[in-house]
Image (cartoon, rainbow, N blue to C red; front, side, top):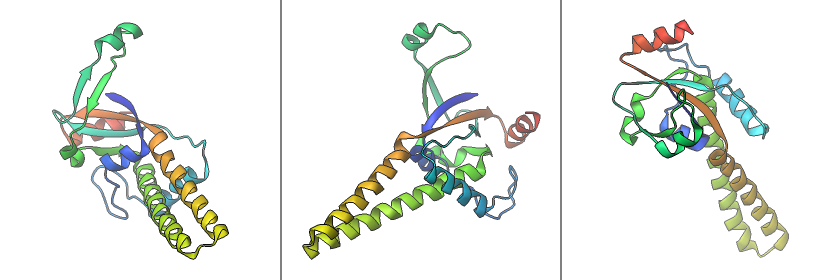
Length: 178
């Protein structure tokens, strides 16, 4: 099992949103309302909290490189720190065991942030043409707020546990056992 903390922007770039309202072999049906509720929660609460996501991946996809210099300082044989590499081409190989509504919520939140940032920048561009300092300032503040919210997605992280399994059946059994 690998444990890592990942910024939300990287999570949504590296793990697909689960399909909504479709029967899935590995999970229950994902409901859009639950994903939206989580997106709203993260958007509204700067101090949000969530348990770790549980993902699984087949053997020989991820590469782990221990960092001896760090492990010597930690001096705890039960923990091995290092760099976990996930090839971009393996995005489809990383599957969700637990946390599908939260992952959907993060995707919805990122879409919302991107949409607002684009709209704010367009609004600012149009406001500059009006030569009205009050309107231009309000538009500039809107862009600044949108950029601050986008920065949250890069600075805020969630814990992720990744199981390495030989099959989907093995992954489901491990999840059922816990």
